[in-house]
Length: 498
Image (cartoon, rainbow, N blue to C red; front, top):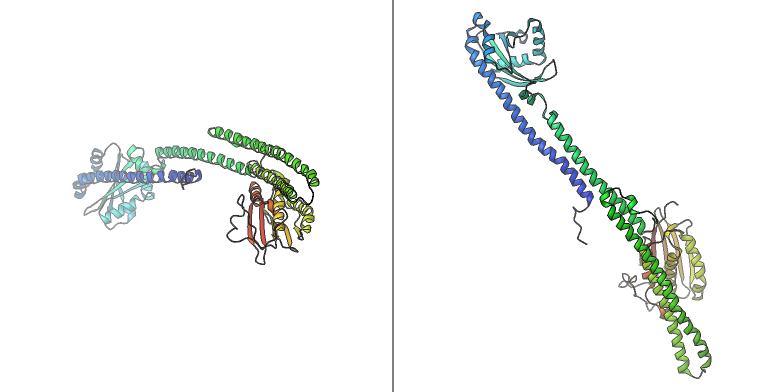
């Protein structure tokens, strides 16, 4: 397995993709906006330059102030204006107010019945105010304004000419109906081509993000189902049923096949364990039964013969325990592959086991006490929980001194069940605390009393406990008691509603 990196998770890639999809248009838009502003400025400069050129051509006529000459200025303007340009020549006498501007000439000509509308437009568009400021500043003003008739905009340049009679202001404008004027008339982000490009980009980004989200959701469903299967919460749901991405169909089928093989393997392991245990215990039992006639036939005076029979009997007992431990070990492996799915009342099972084990513990001069909270339900199997409790209680009784007590507690919080087994034995040395769950490890402090059958200890009990607990998605914790003794705590997830 390769080492995980921060960029491997699909969720991280999804976030990065969203950031990139948001950043790219912002950066590109900013560059295009700057270019468009430069183009607009160039267009305004062009209109203003055209206005200045026309003003310079008209300046001799305007400075003479001859009414006969000024009356023909409209013809001169028409000759100078291009086909796409509208001109308005305004005049303000000296010491006059802003309302004293007169429309002297226009290209194209304004009909008499439209003069009032033209004046209203000049006022509302604040072009008269612009002309007033240009006369005072004696410099051209560039701007764009809205037009009343169709709400389009006009590119406008106001160029002043100061004479002895007053101030002349030439308004040069390019209508938005022309292609060049539209560059200024419409904001960049409202241009049809920009809106279309943005729409296509958003659609593409949404589609790609949708694909990533779909894959991520399918994988998340796979993860939840795999977690549920690993703890035995889902017995019949299939990965293929959860998948809605065709490209993941093969993966889903392989997952289903893998789960099926694991369950078949677990069943085969359990069956093999049963058959092997039965096959091995049968000859062991026959050997032990055959010892009875020999024991009766060997006289008490034959110490060597009696000792040999005792050794054979002990070895048979040891072999029987070894077979039982091997069976439990194999069953623990099967539990890891195919966890149990039954709803178990933990308190009820533990209370029953404590009653069954009370007699043997009292025979060993150890009290067995139970404190059980009712209604604590977990997912597992009776067999797995019985193995856990029996191994823990046997171990606690074995290490408890004569007259001691072993307490078994079952409790629950909001989400977890707790099973504690506490004894009054010598505890476990600090150097052994991390190893007591290892397979084959056994620690028997001299301060403790050896339990009956201690010669048959194989160091498998706590290892099997941990395997069973992990198969039920639980954890196991151990510690020495401050007042003396040892605590083993099992934490299991509570079963959900039935």
